[in-house]
Amino acid sequence: MNNVSTRRSAKHSLSLPNLLTYARIAAIPVVVGCIYAQSIMDGPLWLRWLALAVFIAAAVTDFLDGYYARIWDQHSAFGRMLDPIADKLLVASCLLMLAADGIIHGWTLWAAIVILCREILVSGLREYLAALRVSVPVTKVAKWKTTIQLIAIGFLLAGEAGDQVLPFTTQLGLLLLWISAIFTIYTGYDYFRAGIHHLIEEDER
Image 1 (cartoon, rainbow, N blue to C red):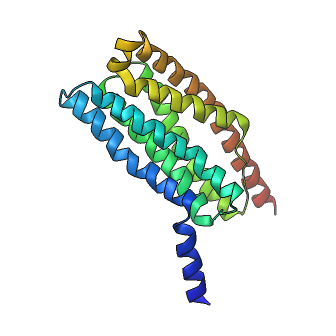
Image 2: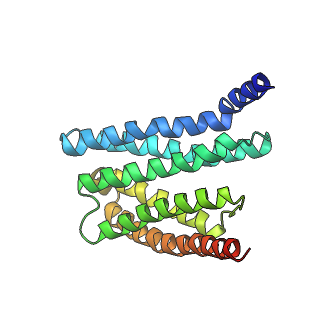
């Protein structure tokens, strides 16, 4: 029986949705490396376009892995665990690299801090609620938050290279990052409220 379970687990871990998630994780060092080489080591601006292209491809896999998991019924506990981790790693790595780059600076650092703190909070709450076997569905507002957040990071990754093609590219990215931070606070509060609600219910039992 254990051998059967092991084979099923290995099969699920190599399903297309999970392979797409692996690809999203593999894209992180490429994006970070391109921005580091361009900004910190004074590399050519085309590295920013390469970073943006890889980031867009990684963001698309976030949609495709869930899509294929649904239509092919390839949902797995491993995939549900790994998918949000991949998302958070991608976003956090890009935000930290953009802060080191100086694109995110001054007051805008607070927007990045809010986003990163929310990700940590939600991860903790999800783990706690999962232990209680309580599922908190992703709301439409949370999906909008993620979309705006990814678009903002995309504009910021283009940075100076983007400004040469479309003026105010960086400023638009910073504005969208603030909008994303506002949505982040709202959705983070929803998760926190759900966690507190179930905690009170557990104490009352």
